[in-house]
Each structure stands twice: as structure tokens, then as C-alpha cells.
Image (tube, rainbow, N blue to C red; front, side, top):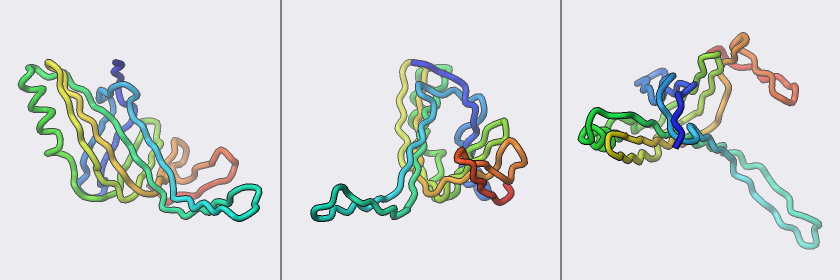
Length: 161
């Protein structure tokens, strides 16, 4: 199992309760963080057609999952960390801010903590958080913070962060 330091900061509800879920330098396990996403796609099959036709229906969805690891002082403290893990997590939907120290900022709209499994072994506690939210946007870049140039060369203008 690999452990490395987080290079991102994750804040739930940055304009409200401002809950820090991951800070720069926090210990993360294995693959670190994983973001998956998608949208609803309707598939149409036509009689005698060469292939199918797809229709984008939107409803963008993103999931972010990470596992924090900490070495506790005692086995009892590791058990307590695992058991108390869900008690500090937000239960409401709000924007999620993901930031790098270099200046990149992303926001996932209407994000909610979906699950919070935990485990412990001896003095180690492992706390996983899975968040589910809506549309993903870039809210700042290392440059001027207001413009993101997509890989296809088109510019997407952003509201100031």
C-alpha cells in the first residue's frame, strides 16, 4: 500500500459552513483520489440502420472518492477515529471546491457526501469519503484566474473566483 501527501485541498460548501475535507499534505492511500463522471445518454436503434444514434441528455454527474490515512497513538484511538469519522462530515448539498497550490480551482455543483466507510488496523485508521455532485467547472487557473483555454483551442471564460 502506497501513502502519499495530497497536492489538493477539498472544501465542501466554501461559501457557507466551509468544511475542509482534505488539506495540502494530508496522507492519502493507494491511488489517492479518483474522479469519475458522465451524463445521461439516450440510445436510439432504428430499423435497418447501419448503427445506433445517440442523444446527449445532460444531467452531468461527478463522483470524487479519496481515502485519508492517519497513524494514531493507540489502537483505541484508531478505533475511535474510524467510528467518529461520519460524525464530522456534512450532510447537506453544496458546492465542492478542489484547489491546487499552483492556482487551479475546480467546483462541482450540488455535492453531497454519499458514503463514508472506515477501517482500522492496529494504530492505523483509514477513512474513505465518496462525494456525488453535478456539473464540474474550472473557477481559476494558474494564469489570470478568469480564463481557461481548453485543449481543443477554444476558450471558456469563467466568472472570477
